Amino acid sequence: MLQKLTSGFLLLLSLGIVSACDQFDLDDLRKKAPPSPPEISLSATLTDNQVVPRRPNSSLSIGAFTATYDQQTNLLTYVVDFSIFFTYIPEDELHLHRGAPGTNGPIAYTLPSHNGTITLTEADEALLLEGNMYVDAEVGNPLYTRSRGAIIRQPSTPVPVPGPQVALTARVDGSQVVPPTSSDRKGIINAIYNKDTNVLAYWSIYTTNNLSFTSSSEAVHLHRGAPGTNGPIIATLSFPGGYYPQGEASIPEADEGALLSGGTYIDVHRAEFPNGEARGQWCRSSKSGLRVPLADISVFVSHSSLPNLC
Image (tube, rainbow, N blue to C red):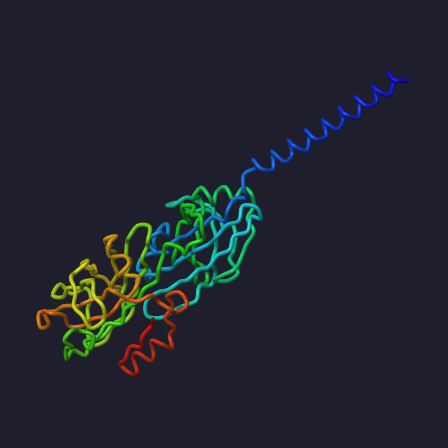
């Protein structure tokens, strides 16, 4: 009888030890399990020169795609802001395609609007995170691609941060020159600044009274300086000849803070105005993306005035 009781006690003791070990192992595994993957930041700059093949005489279009991707839910949350010269023309369709940069691929998803969410398949998740998907904007009947951008994964960060692309705009006229000039020539320059590459992609969307950004007799400079003060040149903004003035410039890292906080300006020079004919302070665009509606442009033309777009 004593032997049976002893055997039973030992059996219960061993079961308790095994159960405790199992619980310990489970708790230990829970502690060692990696945390849930954070949302992944993605971005793309849409330009017409990424279209394959590039359409002849295409209107320059620049846009920004920013998104976050949740690997647990396969949910892509995105925003697309899109602009072209002179008037804003809505895209007929926005698509995500499978395909590496420089190649064309099939449509994977149609984006229902300029901002929203879509759910990706596991196969497309791999393509997206490897840089083998792109976003494009299509217009016309039949549809053709007007602008395209390769989707790039952004470096991981411990806390959410804004995307690397910042929309900027400058209203240029003689009244802002220090001292002011009598010139009645005016214009608007828009830009997208990439904080990862320090590249400023800029273009002129509107001018009056023959303000030219492509004439060899004129120079356009980016200066450091607050409104009402003059400052040193940071970069020369070249505008190669063409119907749509545009270009790119590298901005020194030390001047990025001033550029993004309103501490820089554009100065347009001519022989008649060696110290500057027209000037405009860079500021972050507060419009939806970089869109300039047709109604705004009509106001510019009819009243010969340029509203502040910031």
